[in-house]
Length: 229
Image (cartoon, rainbow, N blue to C red; front, side, top):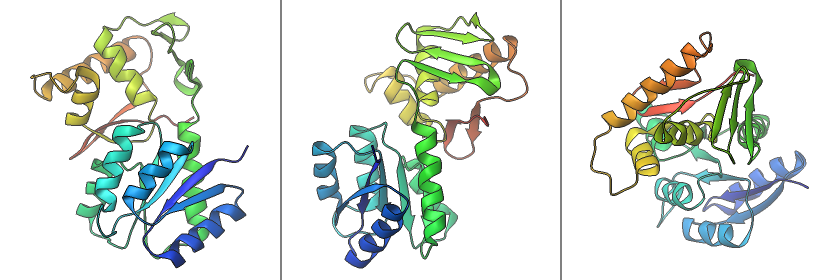
């Protein structure tokens, strides 16, 4: 079954161009001309990925991206922007975008970015296995194994590791991790996230994962989980 990609852009000719590129690559596409319509589409269709323009009237790409990540956190977002400033790219990633592409772009690069994002998110709902670092997460049983041996984690350490691993390649702000793992009513600071990341890293290192730390620090933003398979 073809993956469904939602194309969100207020310019009809741009939506059509993007859809042609993606359909030629074998994807099914649906479209929306604004953020509100995009969210309605996602309520009625199972969407595997969203291609989202940054500059739109009304609900812009930043706000739309934040809403998508709040309501549909497992769906990756590829942000399209005509802006080249680093600050704008960082802002887009901070709002939950998984990747960005600057206009104008080549259709081959667009499809390559889409393919890469879909590969990152094609994880088993029951087991996450990362062979290159011999890490396995049993989602149902809430168990973690390194080289076949159980790894002892606190409940919050497990929840944090799972959230990051289920969203490989996505950069999370510390505040977002704090809200998702500890809850919006938790009054502790973001240093709680840092201390838990530190503990997870130490436990993974002691278990034998020394060559490649899967939890990467994203300077100015927070953390992301990234493994080269």
